[in-house]
Image 1 (cartoon, rainbow, N blue to C red):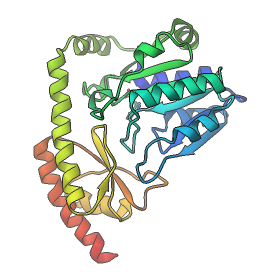
Image 2: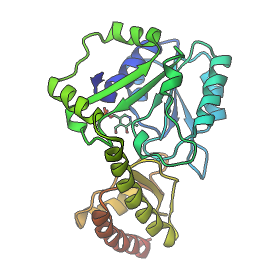
Image 3: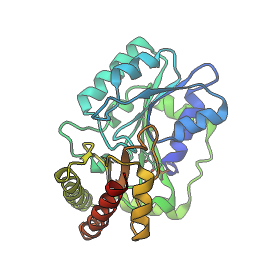
Length: 286
Ligand SMILES: Cc1ncc(COP(=O)(O)O)c(C=O)c1O
């Protein structure tokens, strides 16, 4: 257990990377590992996404992996929302294990419960057997517990021991621990209901954009990453004036794409009215 999965991301970067063993990460991706590596003075190799799908470029990641300390494999990937299926992930790990046997792959499954693509799978069963694979999970997303700072890692005893040796105190709070225990006791039906609520609102919102000629990526998360054909900043400012907050800039896509969080269906029905006006204003000004 850890103080949010943020702590898992930092600990794995600290333990498995070094000044001579780089962190490899797609760009854009959730920035914690790359930010922590930079802070420590560890080299960071970034790998662009495939376009236009904005999926991770597994061949390029494999190419960059050689002799690296750790690959950050964010699946589904924040901020672009796309995922890699189980076979693709397993084949990638096998190829890394062969070409760069000391490299650890950190699979960040923060949005696991929201993924709906065919063949998407957790890598937990693989991680417990393979000391070069660690899975990070969080209670911050589907369980709505971001403020309680609870996350965890699952891996082979050898990998977890190395992590615990550095971060042995496990900075978790008792309230969060008890809330996490309660969250784990939820029935599958309760978790599925939250996932379905998100999928319904996400499908509605994605269709709204697609019908108007704007292209969202194939979202596996509780947000969309949409090509709105305008800089995110102007769109964001227009939406904010009407009380709707959308995501910050995500280079290198800030000139065309915006990340939009999915709320309830009712919230998204209100939000798209604001998006309609903001996109019309942005188009008129262009
Ligand atoms: C992909 C991903 N991993 C990890 C985190 C960190 O979450 P937490 O530290 O709240 O568990 C986030 C938060 O947004 C995220 O998007």
